[in-house]
Image (cartoon, rainbow, N blue to C red; front, side, top):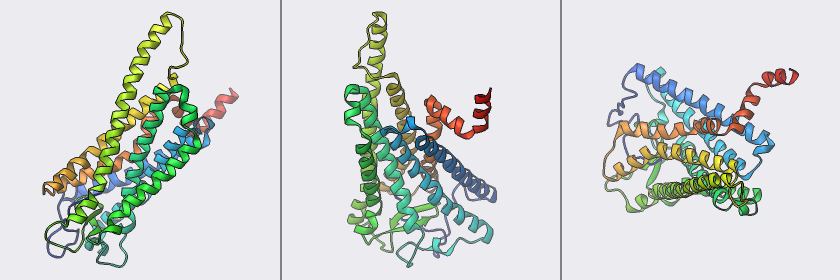
Length: 345
């Protein structure tokens, strides 16, 4: 989301960057194919998630609402963010020149597509991080305080938190353009995405703009760090409960204060989701640090941003592997004829 100010694709004074993915025709074709496949995978996976969560009464829970919110954020990436990159790259291949708007940043023209796509990508990334944090909180309460789960975690409170996460995330996403005239959006020739960067102001990086852009990694790292810590606490508690459960089973005694098996399973699923998102976000973290130190890292920029984008299609895979009920509901949804034949038999 944050990129050092580098020449845009058709910078008049410098040639476009030749990244490892885009130097030859074969690499360009593979890159576009990857983007197109990512669009289909993101749309298919998250539409299935929404259909299962919204169409199955079992998933009409606070956890289900949060998963639906995460799926909507990922869908937006597949609908808006990636297709713009596909359009720009296909146009470049066919016409042997990129669209004119890629030559300028958002300060140079009255309307720039990145004015919309950039905040959408940033906002949806913030929503994803916030939602995973909320999912972790929800599961930690279910594991650590199972008797208070239903009274503390309600659908109404969860809905309010989801709305606040969307509003807050997109306010944060547009804050660089609102609070600083030195920050613009551009289609970056390294990442092949719309990124925040310095506008037409040259020279030393303005301190005000730098402080505003630092809000992004600060927000991300704080929530991700908190999410990891809470997951560690929850998983440690689950391990203790497992040992206690084994002891109780030997004495034929069970306590109602222990979390249910489904709550433990769901907590492990959210833990896996956290690991996947942290792994996909780590390259961006390294890239931001590199920018602070003055490195451009053009090739690494491409891989960092697109590794983050691929996270949008991983959720349904994790749910399918870790959650048997989700897997069964998705199977029934995708293969209704098989379900009817089974019923008749």
